[in-house]
Image 1 (spheres, rainbow, N blue to C red):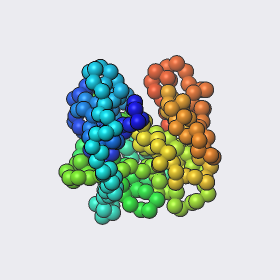
Image 2 (cartoon, rainbow, N blue to C red):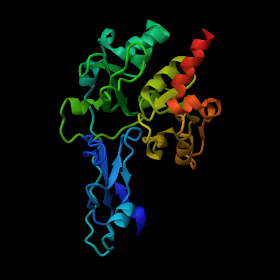
Image 3 (tube, rainbow, N blue to C red):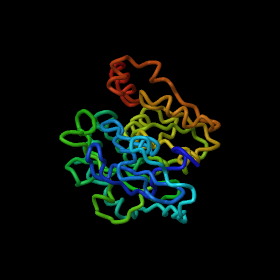
Length: 301
C-alpha cells in the first residue's frame, strides 16, 4: 500500500490549530492506516477552504522532507472503532426554539416571506436562537432517527441576510459553546429529519442551511436539505436518499466536484443551472442558489 491511498484524515471530530492560518480546532491530520499513527503535526487539511485552503498530503510531506513512509512491516495497531456520534438532548435544543424577535436570521426571513411563512420555515427546520452572540441563530442537525447530532451557531445580518464575518467569522457549535468535552460530532444533512415525514417526495441538496430554507420557501415541491459545508458532500450521507429522486444544486465553482462525488449513485442528478446562468461577476462573488432566487424575486416584484 503506497502513496496517499494508505492514509486518511483522522476521524472522531478531533481538530488542531492550523499550521498556516493558526486558527484553533480547524485542522485535521492524516493518519497511517497501517500503524494508526499521525504522519506529522503539519500533515493534514484546514477546514477553512475558502479563506485558508492549507492542505499538505502525506506524499507531498515525504517528498519535501526526503523521508520515506514506514514499511508495511511496521507494527500495526488495531484500528480504533469510530465512536458513536454524540448528540444534544431534545430539552436543550427545545429551549432555543423561542426569542425570534432577537434572532437576526428569523427577522431577515420575515422581511423576505412575511411572518407567517418565515416562522413556518424556522419551525420546520428547527432554527433556534442563541445568546452566544446577540442576534445569533442555531441550525440544529437532526437525523432521520430523531437524534440531534449537533447545532451550528451562526450570526447573520438582520437587514442583508448575509453572514457576519467581520471582525471574525461568527460560526461555532453548541457543544463547543457549552464546553462539552469529548463530543464526537458526526454531521448529518441539515433538514434530514424532514425525510421521515414523506418517503417519496423529491429531495434537493444544497450547501448552506440558509439556501435550503430560502429554497423551501419558494419551491416547496422538494424536500430541501443542506450539506452544511463545501466539503461535506459524502456518499455516506447521501446513502439514505437511495431510491428517491435527488437533485443537487452546487454553489458556483463546485459543480465538477459534486458531480464527481455522486457519479456512481443512481437517481442523483446534479443541476448546472447556476453554471449556465452565472455572469463573471456572479462567479467572482461565489453566489449560490438562494442569491439567484432572491435576485429573481426582486426583479419580478
